[in-house]
Amino acid sequence: QVQLVESGGGLVQAGGSLRLSCAVSGRIFSINAMGWYRQAPGKLRESVARITGGGSTVYADSVKGRFTISRDNAKNTVYLQMNSLKPEDTAVYYCNGDVYTGSGWRNYWGQGTQVTVSS
Image (cartoon, rainbow, N blue to C red; front, side, top):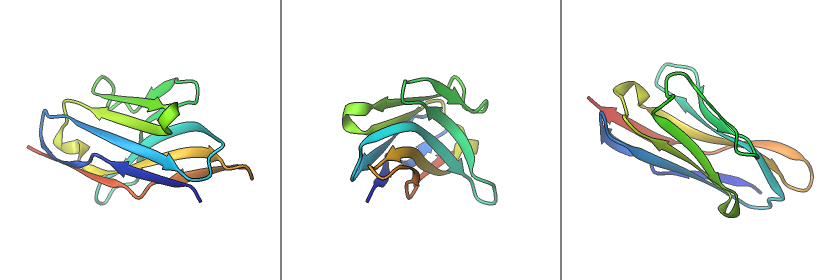
């Protein structure tokens, strides 16, 4: 069984920073692309940032220049450094990843971590 567990969310004032972590555990043979998504109340879940197995990154326009996604393959962990946070960044942030478990590639989601940015 593969689990993705996020941590690092919380309450921060506008202009502040948070660092989210997502640790992948379980029967893991390989991890390919990983990503962070977010869902605000009443809105659809949206992609925030993604990183390939080779380290290439893609960001939503709304977070470019403020957020940085990175990964530590030795720790099976992906991070999201969030700087210059805005109230509109308030959402539940979800980790997502493509994991090979030995029986094939599957896409997994974490349970989410709340990020609240006060004005």
